[in-house]
Amino acid sequence: MVGGNGAVTSTTTLARLNRGSLIRTILVWLGWTTIAAVGVYFYRVAVGRYIHFDVTHYRHYWISRWWLEAHLGGGSLALILGPFQFSTALRQRYIKVHRWIGRTYLSGVLIGSIAAVYMSFNVSPNKAFGVALLFLALAWVTTSSMGLIAVLRRQFAAHREWMIRSYVVTFAFVSFRLLKDLNVFGRLDPESQSVMRGWVAWAVPLLLAEVILQWRRTIGPGRIPDRVLPKGVPRP
Image (tube, rainbow, N blue to C red; front, side, top):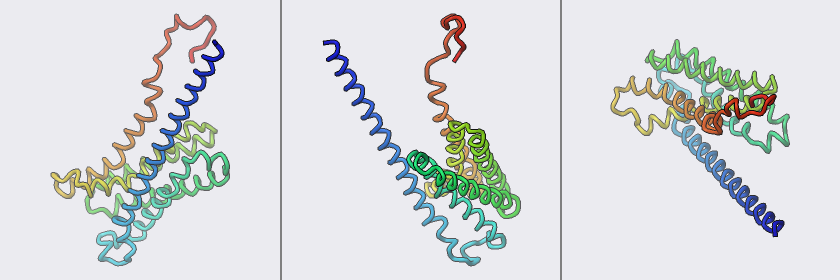
């Protein structure tokens, strides 16, 4: 009878685990599908105009158009390749492909960041927006560099977390456009709107990502008092 109860318990536990795994898989697919859809919208609405290589469409960016092209090109490369880096199947079955995608992603970040730094100083007529763009570039290259350092030191868990942060900053391209289309800061004057979007597009998502990454460690089991630990057992 005990054996029977044990079997029933094991079956129930397994069913719950399978159900939880299925729910997580569905949520992950929904999340990535949403990101892809928003990304496609971004390219159609925001980037599509720059296919027309003339001053009418580039406006004040025309003088530094090649810097803008580098910024858009590097950012697009990172934005498209980023999701593939989080594929467990790809990483486990085709590790060389995973590594080359990672190198290409980091190259895109480097190119896009250098162009962003130049544009923040020399292109934007709104200097306050230029400052926001500068710090976005710094956050972008910093999170990506930390991810690279972590994987070179074979700290794979830290590498994954830093690359999540990096991609959150990468997605600021899209977030900026969404904030504009949704008219989130519509009560402000046009210049102030650009500045607010320039900060909120990456700083707020990065803060939320950090809370999610640290949630389990912070909200999980509390610290074990020293008196509870057996003698000679090190603190976990």
